[in-house]
Image (cartoon, rainbow, N blue to C red):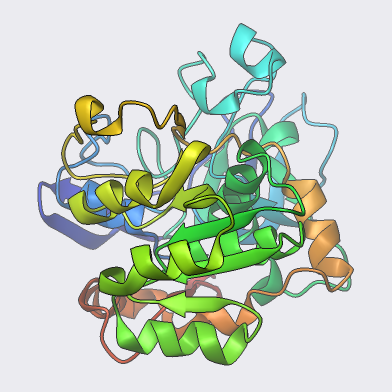
Length: 349
């Protein structure tokens, strides 16, 4: 089978690999029908994810059809359409029992797929802990609708959940890339008083305006003024930082009112510094880290109910054998790209 593989720092290559097989009773083999490219894949490519292993098949955002299951799998069966969670987790360790599945202590736990073990930018993938990591897709939900469930939608849902949103809040999202837009989809379910999205790219600002007319859109150089005009207490009640740059990190805490919550879901290329003397007296609460992907079943039901729709984020499509062209487009942010769907089905036997 064809598999996009992390060869070395700065080098992915589409190569032939053997099909995966079940090696643990809790495994499932999934035939990938659609996958997508994530910014985290670019971080692996450029060496910003030290735990990523050379030789692994990359990709952690996918849907597919169960081909086979181990003897310990009870939740899914061959033939089931499934969304694959970005995190495979044992469900039994201290962290899993508390819902912190990103920190699962099993060797195959947390963000393993496409990072420490073979992922899904390929034709077939082995998924450990299949009962936890696979969510059956409702019959009324298409692959396009379900594609982002296990990664960026799970991230957006988690970010909103830990931000403790109330109906009285002014909420600022920094970054209108695909994760920021999935966060926006989930935030709108909470119906806060005011939503502001800050994005530096003019084309993406227009994208937000056209699809979310109830949202205030601003550029970074206007963001602070916009927030102060629209907030009631000298800044945003909640800030969700999804962009991942030095400038947006600073903007996040500067835009927050005293005693606000600042949620950091971005992945940065290098360390950020908290300027504590300048922040003194703001009494901010920072929440950071990787997604705890515990809500995929809920997300799929919200999609089935028509409460969440991210199909408009798929702006481009490529077959698997053209995936490196898709990477070039995705990294360049050209041609209005938001997300790219990679079709693996045409390559399967």
